[in-house]
Length: 260
Image (tube, rainbow, N blue to C red):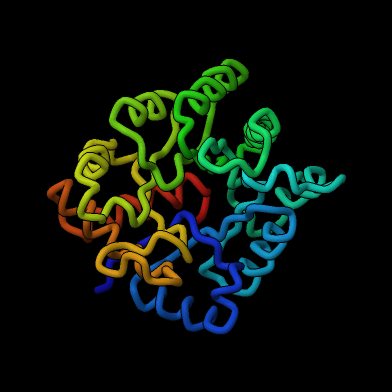
């Protein structure tokens, strides 16, 4: 029997999937996936995510504006995200967060949009998905401030931080999700983090079409079915059967996203 798996983060609307999308979905199903969340980065991609969730029963949608696209927004885009958050098939907000690596949007504008997503999450009870690059302290500071308004429900997407950052995020009630980078040979420290995240806060993802796991590193496009390699890597690190890892991460995703 195939181990049930859930890819909590990919970008199925990416043009790399245009000629092969149905085949990709079928391969994912054959690999044991019972669900996946395709994540919006702009108004248009959020709308596309909802359309894909309506077309494929295995697909769910997240809607939001990714930090590197904040400066490209047009009037009405955020109001549209608010409306999209009410649509059937939407299970999360994002991706949102902060990014100091790229210089595509002013940092204060990123912070503004991150706060908007958090507030919308606290209003709707939809979890938010956090993009973080070279800004762990900034993320935690904003989350600390936001927690004063009410509980937080979210995911540290494609986590690459250290144990201390993971513990601080966990203390705020967040889930930790690992992508293909945890499988890379040089990622020993990251695997140690993956080994100690509490069972009920652990998630897996592909971030497809990016971040293909070992032994397919550098191959494009990454596919949701390849989340099985990440699952096996983490299962080995946690010294548990892949079947158990698959069940617990799938149950965590289903509970967080409120999917039966």
